[in-house]
Each structure stands twice: as structure tokens, then as C-alpha cells.
Image 1 (cartoon, one colour):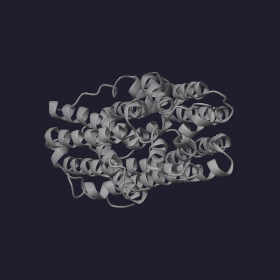
Image 2 (cartoon, rainbow, N blue to C red):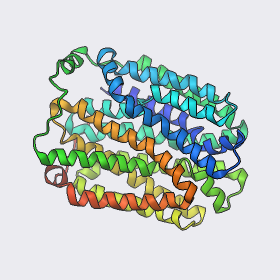
Image 3 (cartoon, one colour):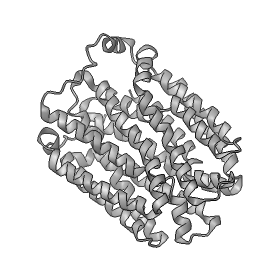
Image 4 (tube, one colour):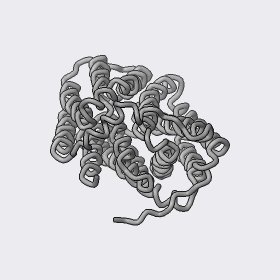
Length: 403
């Protein structure tokens, strides 16, 4: 398991770093491709960033059937190979719609990031579930912590277009890591799922089902808010008065700060769940994340925004890992793969709608993106306080001895 977890986490770290070398600066790339209107740039950026996870969520049942026959390793490898090719092609485009079309193609083959979380959680014992999930999610956070900082430097040194070629090399490295290091679990497990022993997700009580559905909604809402920055942050910094030549660098620093803080939150969740119930932890972290967005609403200084970004990222990192872990504890033992597949779909749906929603809101006001984020997080906190009770809401998770 340790070798597989290393391969999954390492591939996520490298792949997510490669993705964020370029994607946070997509609005600037659209401007270079001849799109002058900031509102149009925000809309096209949102659509381009959102279409890939949207298609992945829709195609998840189909790829699940493929995984039953060929295994998860095949799915991850074909996803990474697709990104190797499409990132090169994005560096060759001449029109904004070319980017959108390539993102559609990525959506047909994408999904390795969310699949990695489900694989890690399903393979781990229940008492180590938070640790396994946190490890993979930390890798997914640390990659974006490194990527935007490098991408900001590359955008100045070689240009955004050439940065896509560097991104392709990152995905190639992730492909090699999974290909050489990841060992597919025995096929007997897959066979039992195909026979129908583990595919029915039947909860022990109506309360457990209600809690699972709530946590799906929490994961969806957290992803909606967490990924809403991408299409609008460079434009927001421009309105704030940051010099044009410094926008890419400042945006990269803010993205990296959020990612590093989120990674710290992912890693600390296991310890926090030993002291706090999931309900209390989710309630307060959602409110803390909402507080981290308030300075963006009032257009405060860049240093203040940096501090607020750290608070936001740390709180969201804890909340996402705690949500997956709490949901994992109400999923019946024989249907863990099915249950985590549904959680993955909720996560992907949030990833898909987040940039699209941000792009639409930005046509009204870029500030409205952050106002809506505050409101969504406040609603999630209230929902958790009211609904998440009983076994999941009240129990803390015992400490796990390190091996």
C-alpha cells in the first residue's frame, strides 16, 4: 500500500503542479489570443476551466465500467497521456475556441485527481482513512502551491504559450511514475464487484443515508467556492491597481499561499478529528473560510489579501478532508468503492460548476464572486450544524498508532 500511495500521491503532485503552471494565467492567455473585453475573458476562462471536470463527472459511470475490466491504473495512465498531448496542442492554438475544444477533449479522458482520492480511501483501513485521504489531497495541494509560482516566473521568462510545453513534460513525468511504480490490486476484488456483492449502496439507517447525502453536498459546495478564484483573480488584481507586469507574479503567490495552507490543513485533519467531532470541525472551518474571503469583498491591500488567503486555504483544506473521512465512516464496508465514487462525482460537479459560475458572476461584478462564496460557506456551516448528527456528528476518531 505504501508504494501505491507514493505513486498516486507523487503523480498527483507532479500533475497538479504541471496544470497550475499555466491554467491560473488562462485569462492572460486569452487576452494574448486577441480577446479584448475583460467580461468575455472571464466568461471564456470559466467555461474552459469548468468543462473538463463537468464532462468527467458525466462520464464517470462509463469509465467505472472500463475500470472493472482493465483496472484503475489503466484509467489513470490514459488520463495522464491525454494531458501530455493536449498541453502541447494548447501551446500551438491561435483562437480562444481552440482552448475550449482542447479542454473538452481533456474532459473525455480526465479524472485522475479525483480518482486518486477514492483509490486511497478505499484501500485504507477505516482507522487510517483520514491519513490516506489527507496524503493524496496534500499532494494535490502542494502541486498547485509550486505550480503557480513557477508559472509566474515562466510567464515572464519564456511566455505563457511556451509554458504549456513545460506543463506537458510534468504530465509525462507523472505518467512514468504511475506506469513504473503503481501495482494494480488483485483482480479478485474487481470480480466480486462485478458479481454484484459490493455494488449496492444500502445504508444501515435513514440517518446514515441523510448524513452521506449532506456530506456530498458539503464537498460539492466547498469545491464550488475553493475553485472560484481561477477565472477572476488576475482580473481582480488588475482592478485593485496591481501593475500589469506584476499581475501574473502576484496571482501566482496568492494561488501558492492558498495551496500550501490547504495542504497543511489536509495533513492536520487526522489529529483534529481526534479532538473534535466532524460536525464541530466542519462548522467552524466553513465559517473560518468565509472570514478569509471577506477582505476580497472590500478590496483590501495585497498583504492583507495574502493573509486572508492563508486562512481560507487552511480552513478549506481541513473541511474537505474531514468531509471525505466522515462520509467514509457511514458507507457500508461492502460498498466503499461505490460510495467513494459518488463522493468523487460530487467533487467533480463542484469543480465543473465553480469556474463557470465565477465567470458568469464576474460579468456582473468580480466582487460578487467573493460575496457569493461567503454566503455559500455560511449556508454550509448552518447545514452541518443542523443535519450532521448521530454517529458521524458526535463521534471523534481515535488516534492511530504510527507504523
